[in-house]
Length: 330
Ligand code: PBG
Image (cartoon, rainbow, N blue to C red):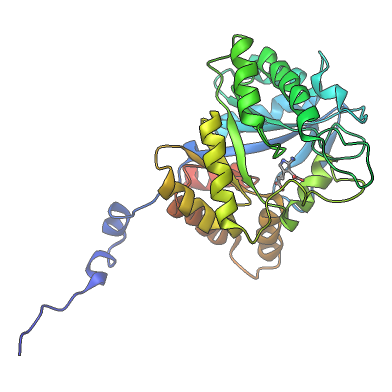
């Protein structure tokens, strides 16, 4: 009878120090991106109950938040604007003194090292709450091609104000190629595009829509966002966006779409992937943590690590500040 040495995997698991040395994936502060909601009322500071440490912040409170992020070592923010004025064409988004431009100026003055990524969409700026202008017939339906030039105008406004990276999130067909061309023509050929390539039509965006005041008034976004059942189509979207010139890709939501992250990582190993741990996914953890149904810190770290394991390089999460603080304590 041949005898084999007994395999003992726990030899490498027994000691904490060795365990840490052979750990395959690590979450570090440099991987975190914190979403910020900038409100048009300068003195606004409204906490968003379902999310950890997240507020609608007016420009007068932005400096404190920025100082906190810098002190915690969070390297990047993802900016969303909540404008005072909404109309059918989302015109505040490409007005000269848009809320986003004001916020970028303030952040850059306060902390030039903080990377400012700007979400590029119309849902918070249109009175109907959809991600572009609508066609004039029947059901609310986004007019893809009529929305594209407006998106480019909005992107140039962000770029002029000093955005470090443009993140189009409206799932318009062809958006990355028109943005790349538009930015290049306006001498922003060095500005990277982080495309929300695979954005699913998800129930987990609900707290965000409250935060960004951008829920559709009528209808839903299933006509332009991905069907949660479709992996193949998501991979197709990603291929297209990369061909069109996207520098990095967002997969969203993240926790419930780890298979998408893993597949994209395999098919495009050199494109940095960003997992968007969306509002509803954070809300579940917060609620369970508050009730002591799970240990919040351990659960959050485990969820975020699962995104790293799947192949995400960076993570957008409303837990960024908390995670940064936890990592500093270690
Ligand atoms: C807007 C946008 C959404 C999110 C980010 N950008 C919501 C939506 O499509 O309704 C969701 C983020 C989150 O839930 O945290 N296009």
